Each structure stands twice: as C-alpha cells, then as structure tokens.
Length: 200
Image (cartoon, rainbow, N blue to C red; front, side, top):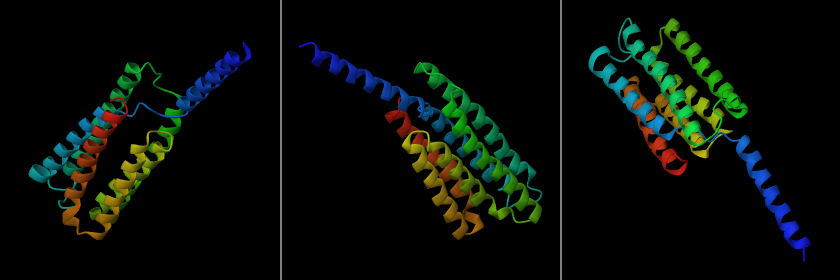
C-alpha cells in the first residue's frame, strides 16, 4: 500500500524537475507591452520622416533622416530592456540569465550586421536598400532570439523577412510604408498577442 503513493510522489517530483529545466532553457520574459510601445515609437519615426525630414533614401545628405531612426533604435533598446526587466521582476524570475545571454548574442550579431550594411550602402550611394536591410536583419535577429524564446517571436522574425522580400521587389517609394508596417504594425500586433498569451 505504501509503494504506490511513493511511486506517484517520485513521478510528481520528476515532472517538477523537468518543468524547471525546461523553463531554465526558455526565455519567457519577452515584453509584449514593451513591444507595443516600441511599435508606437516606430510609427512616430515614420511620421517624422514623412512630415519633416524625408526618408533617408530620398534626401541628400540623409543624416537628419537617419538620426530619427538612430533615436528610435536607442530608445527602443532602452525601453525593451527596461520592460523585459520589469516583466522578469513581476514574474519572480531572474533577468540576466544564461538563456538571455544566448538570445542576446544571436540578436546582437544580426543587429551589428545591419549597422555594417547600412554604412556600406550609404558609402556606395545606394540608400534605397535601407528598408530591406533593416527589415531583413531585424527579422534574423528576432528569429535567432526566438529559438530560445516564445514561438511568436519566431513568427515575428519570419514576418519581418517577408517584408524585406517585399522591399526588394517594390519601388523605393514603398520603403516608409514597409517600415511602418514592420517596425510599427508587427510590433504592435505581436506585442498584443504576447501580452495576452504570455503574461504581459
């Protein structure tokens, strides 16, 4: 009579250990609400290009227009890190974990490539390629981080790559609309889904 309860307790303990190990190797603090805020900032960047500076591939010199996107990159990095740390704290999890370091490595290398390609096309005098570079490298960054994270991040990366492919096929005049759809719309849509399904 005592063997069966002991067996079940051992099964429960093994299941708990398995769940703990799976959680330790899985990044669950992707901030859905932070993504929504980043998407709104991106729409402001697109509006600033459209209303005041022109797109970087439409004006010479392009530095003021590029500064808008540099400011977006900086503010998004700060906001994303802050909101991820807040979500980790709210869920009672550690922020700077080994799995986050692995995700940051894959994400960071793709973003560095995007920066290098940006300078390359500017030096070559072909700034019209910026939308496909930015959308494509960010898609790869999200896909790399998504390998150890929640599945919507991988689908988001694939969606950015699809927009990059569209940018290759379409005229340069579609660039701002594609950036708005990607950095604005996809962040808001996937951010809302992650907030709904993955605890904010």
